[in-house]
Image 1 (cartoon, helix red, strand yellow):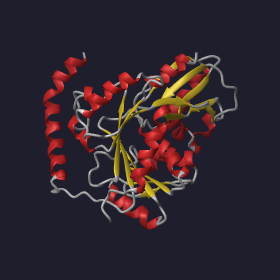
Image 2: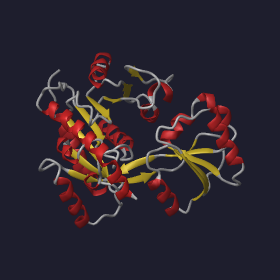
Image 3: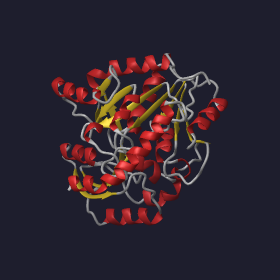
Length: 353
């Protein structure tokens, strides 16, 4: 089936590959302008569409940079929002106005970082620097293809289950641009890796990645680590029968985790990534919960920030809602990864603008 999809979509993929190659070449030749900044700008992105773990990676970076005493800002496009232009996320912001991921960053870090959205990232960076002149570093969410900004460093994520060197250009596969453009990456992270992974297997993956990356580009492996479920609805005891709701790109790792933990998924409602909840959907969720017997409602942290809107409070008060936090763990590679990040933040490679 996958081979058939690749063959049928090949002409469209070829056109997309040509377009992205021309665009990247124009940037490389300086025919399209790329702006750098005197403040370190760390880009977190990928070659593929969704599902590689940008959100937990940025959360990890925020935690590390704050531990260094840095003043941190996060800039995102704000995918799925109904607004346009530059906006700073605040207590009155909702997912509809700023996007679910920026709202997640704001809620999780509760005033410790500045979070802003803007589809024109150069303008957004300039605006946020004017408003917050004491910032030390800016994290640019999902900005690898946004070449109008010349970052101090680019972190490219690729999943263990579907590494970019086995993937194809859209629509044959999920790549936004050709594999060879991994050479722009300063750091490559293989996300969602097994917690115990033989060094031989890591070596093989590194060799395949280095086929496309610049020589000497550091490659790290990290795994998913889920936290304890957090209640945000009607008070109730957590137990191991759940009505699961996911609005993320790839719920498979969460399903695997629940299975390992012996948690029974009574019903799973799988919604599209960045799904926008409304009254009708929330009412359907509560009705389904009431018909599911003895269980609780479990969702992701990204879905939580949308469901926790005050306009949905009556639904939250009528059922036990929980969300499960997600983190990335670098295990033995933690110190090396953080050392590379510290170097990139200290030694800004961007232009002085």
